[in-house]
Length: 279
Image (cartoon, rainbow, N blue to C red):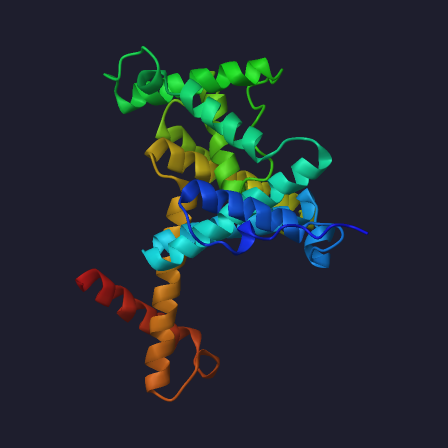
């Protein structure tokens, strides 16, 4: 008959960071216990948990964006749980454990900061530190037999973020437009081609051409020093604020957007825009 696990640590909320980290690891091991654990947790795999990991990372970013520090504490805990979850699955498979995961990232941080943990000078500009960081990462990729320029750019990144990383990698070896003007010219060219050919293209071709246009727009942002992901998040937030202002104005008239029309909503949008600029 199997021996029930010792849950003493699991129910002990005392102690500092080290003990609470050990408690969280123990909780996850208990949840995944094949005899006494949770059936849902036992069934999960790296692949099934990955979407939750991405979602939790975005929820952390959302709490930061809203400056909700109380919620951020909880969201960071949720994200930490994802790391522990993947690590427990790895432990069961014999791939790694929490100690090796923590050791690997600690070793990486020490190795990538020789100006802090080694004998290199700290008297560097931010640009020089970034360049040195990239050299170290390139050496690490070479050690992993990732010899191609674009090796190691994660496939699972959001598309805008991955586009930026791909472009930066290519630019480091000289594959880049030398000026913003040329990027703007390419945007005009891609836009014209898409508009002119939209009636004759297949859906697949339209999607491909539209993707090309987005990629060049991301490139323009990079040349301007603007992060496309950050810029689009800000625009999403602005659109939400202004559309909610339209809803509020219509509600004051006893209406909803479905009861309105584009001309009226456009006028309310412009009014919301003027109010924002005046504040």
